[in-house]
Amino acid sequence: MKEQILSILPDSCPWREHLHWFESIDSTNLRAKEMAKQGAPHGTVLIAGCQTGGRGRGDRSFSSPAGLGMYLSVILRPGCAPRDLMHLTCAAAVAGCDAVMQAAGFRPRIKWTNDLVVGKQKLGGILTELSVDPKTGLVDYAIVGIGINCLQKEEDFPPQLQQIATSLSMVCNQQITPVTMASAMIETLARLDLADKKTILAQYEKGCMTLGKEIVLVRGEEVLYGTAVGLDPDGGLIVRFRDGTVRPVNSGEVSVRGMYGYV
Ligand code: BTN
Image: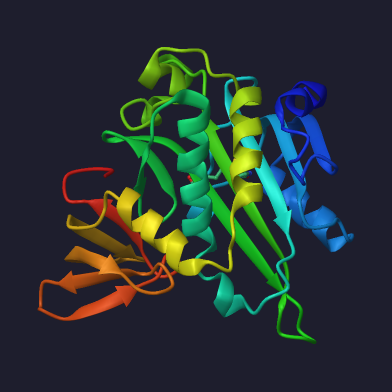
């Protein structure tokens, strides 16, 4: 598989060098963190054929059956302050949409903050994690994990996901393999200029289907209602609450649902 991915990736892609393929793994994000702690360099890419403990935001699981999805994590060492990386999930979402466009010829939408969606269904998700060096206060490493459903048919998803999940095959009726998807994903992630926050957030805003929608915000036991009215300069969601107050929320604080279901 590694050879197949390398044969598709352009020679100019700077991340060809540290590519790791795992037939089966607990979670590429978890393993990426272990490798980062052991000193793996910027641009180290981990790809798995299946994950036995694929994770999503809020400690949810991410369905990762063998051979049907793309499961990929990248180690970044941007050497910046954590506040300069607040938009990392947004950046990865834009790269995810670019990669799907490149591999499958259509552009998913983004459900704030980290889901790639088509119509009312989830195509994939992003899980970013940061570690800060306590001595310098700078980011030691960041992990960007992305999962995209590629070849699943409806019955390949667990019953509770069948109404809300989709795959590249289901959307475009073509067999876009995890290898093809991973190659495109590596290319678009490697091209991201994280320092150019303005451009990234402008692209994110264009692709974000949550904006303008009435939403439900869930914070622990608390449920709040509002309208998503914009993005703040870090990619936080600006919400007009029912009591008239307007303030940004961040993805660590709340999870967002549509008024009538997942989107
Ligand atoms: C979400 O849906 O909330 C995010 C899902 C992220 C899944 C990817 S698959 C590759 C990487 N490894 C993981 O365990 N999670 C991410």
